[in-house]
Length: 159
Image (cartoon, rainbow, N blue to C red; front, side, top):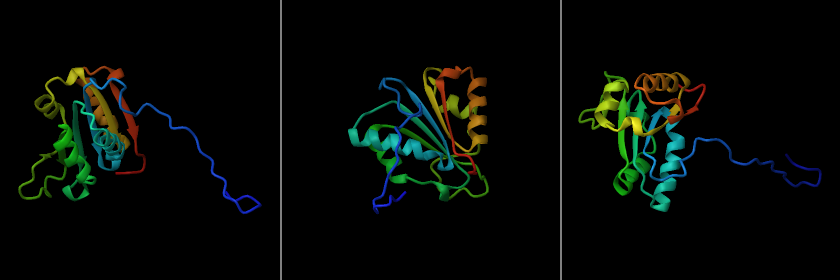
């Protein structure tokens, strides 16, 4: 908004919410991102890279096709420099690239069991389209993950 004297006035608010890294760096984490829901995780990983803080993180990054994957530079750096385990997943089984290094199909209980044996000890962060977040939460509850171990962030309007 511009004032009468030609100056620009900016209105700001504090950062709020609980979709942030836990204070305890020993807390084991699982990030589940759907599409552009990777954005808050990119921010968290970039912070950890900038501070060289290692945390026990497993990231599942679900997209319809491999061409939709973004922030590859940050994901690769987090893997190489911090030991973050990154599992890209494509759900369109008809469009899997040759030599695809990731997973194919939907994220499900079997994938979690196979890749995260200590899954009940972890805090889960879910971010993406509402339907994906709800389905992931339901899957985790079916696996007896406690509700207080699940944090959610939605990106409404995105598919």
